[in-house]
Image (cartoon, rainbow over all chains, first blue to last red; front, side):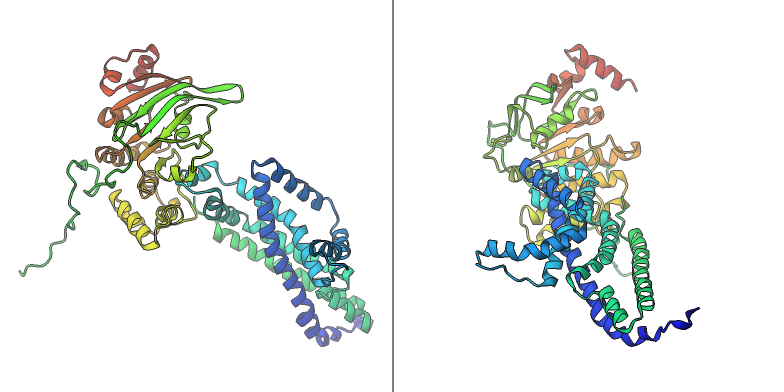
Length: 230
Length: 286
């Protein structure tokens, strides 16, 4: 049945697939996840703060991002970011930020909405008594957050944050709409060049599955190790 | 036999006059507190003046007034829901109140001009559920606020923390985490953590009511020693034995009001209000 297929194309294109494609995918995932968690945490803090203005800005932002398809946001930012950049810096012409920067900004802003919901649950999972104890010791809001609440919230939510990052890892394949070469994009290019669509897309699927399955397995093991003894 | 060093108690620091460790507590001798700062003569350490607090339409505190002077130990008791925990949390503004005034060492608690974190750092508080930070070791629990709030150097903070840990008899547990300690041990660490800030007054919010009965004693022993060292204390508790032993005054609350505010002897000997009499007869029956 497989007599018509030629899987040797995979072997010969491995350096390109992993050296460029996978490196791009992992870099984008790691940077967007890191920045997204930071922004998401700030959004969660805004949303849980009693300050009406901050609370509503964060709520609207999160709801908006969660209601839009990712591809649309990717497109939107690709065309819009140059104009926003020009407006902010008062430059006369749109500022070219490049497809990678545009994708990174998009994923960061988009994932921050999801990370913020996770961090919000994480912060709410810490009892009010912990905040009370930290405040009673004279700690300010920021000291309490940085030293008492967020470290615990982060540890409680680490499995969920990593699971969301695995989803992000898969979502980065959407950068094909910006003609960027991530792992799937690299596989796609080889497939079309050599006319080996089935082999390459099958291989790409196997790699995505292997990476995500292994990562999920490791997350479950980690979950047991980081749990705080209570 | 040659004279080998005897295994035995190490030489303790000189015991300050007046400091007595209870014989059965297993506490090392020495004072839990540094000589007390604050409290100008004639000015109460805590002044609670006509405090009212509402949750929506429900009034939880009604016209509460009392004062606690330096070195005084005041026990606050009353049935559950009487507002005693709410009142003690108003003292360091963990709970806001809408009417009246509380001053601590002359500083208004509910005043926009007050540096609240600074004020709170001088008021130690011990909670019903201990509230140690579970992600930090015991040593880190003892030093965190000293370093971040008082900006003490790490070495100094650690020395002060471990010193107090020794005084509550838990030196062996310095590198453990709160979850590895019993409730009584955790509460003693929580007391040490509050004392590490060198507070001018200590607030206790039902410190023993979440403990298994066999652990109540070890916590009360630490509190008794603290009282005898001269610490100004406001203690919400049902432990009438503690009140009899060290309290100067007993405040009885019911339905958000201070019903009785009397010296210990008056309160136990001849409570004036009927509600206090009923409460005492219930609680002292057993």
